[in-house]
Image 1 (spheres, rainbow over the protein chains, first blue to last red):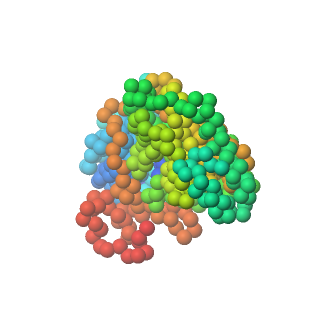
Image 2 (image 1 turned 120 degrees about the horizontal axis):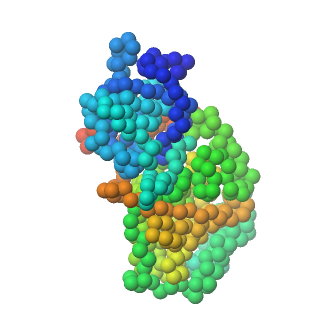
Image 3 (image 1 turned 180 degrees about the horizontal axis):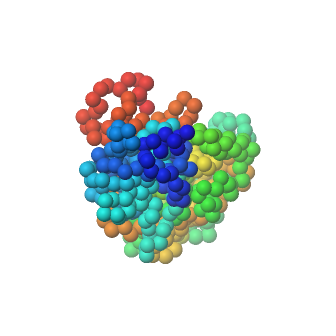
Length: 143
Length: 302
């Protein structure tokens, strides 16, 4: 049911993604980590804030209706360690964004990755928390 | 009775009063025994160190830099991050609480006090996955976690714990320590009750901790931790945590405000939920200084 609702927004497939972003400040139980959304849209706003950042994306669904989606991510220092700067995502940019959606069907998700128009990918987990020599020092801890 | 209190005579009388206030689940004798265990542990380490190294500026170890906890958020890093197991030997009451927590979590019922913008507190402080720094002075060491700018103060100037009649549960506890060469040995009491992290057991406000903290190489600080808690543990819990140097270019620890963008609420059935932008009660991070366009109703206050 939830996936059907999401599919109506997307027109994009639901796939299984192995990585689980970390949300250290609150429970992520409201998100369905077994479901994924992948949306094409335009960045409205990038709230580069603590305790969490939010990427606001304007998405046009298959009926032509505009829906504002919010993608939640970790705070600035964690994103910087994953290579995501405040200047990395600018309002007006066309992107494709992946995440794990809310269970209740509202338009929000945990941010997993962003693919920019030039094909480059920003991932909240791929480069997360690197130590000396690029060795990962932490693992995602979402519960 | 209590060798680590600032005023032993006052402490003896206060300890009797403390016994009376100990919950029925643990006897006064048992609490005293457990407290003495952590105290004895710390004092034995101090005796072994010949009373501790007199620390001067030129002898201080170099713990400068930015550090992050190695591994996930499990208090015992030997346990995989998503594994519901714990290596703690819990009392029946705390095992039951832990079992219920895991069952609720499976049903999506979970709330973290951090979402009220409260500190993690100690010993949970040890598990938080944020940036840290250590400020080392001869008479005091600070351990600062980026989250909530949460600082532990460890006094190494020879003082004892706060007298018992002045003591009360603190977010980071009451920490005293000494140096054994380049190892910082710490005893922490007077903590608030809490949980080691989400999906992990709880601890009581009777928890006390002995730590041996040492920089084992240029990029690793090791914390050897023994937790004592007569209410939650049937035996002391020993784990080893490591903090690893973070070298991301231009990374700094900045002031961290939880209220900056915290649109998380607890539902009546204990579920963590979000107020999304455009919904009633949403607090826009772009309007922190000016405040919301419309006054929040009491229902919306969190």
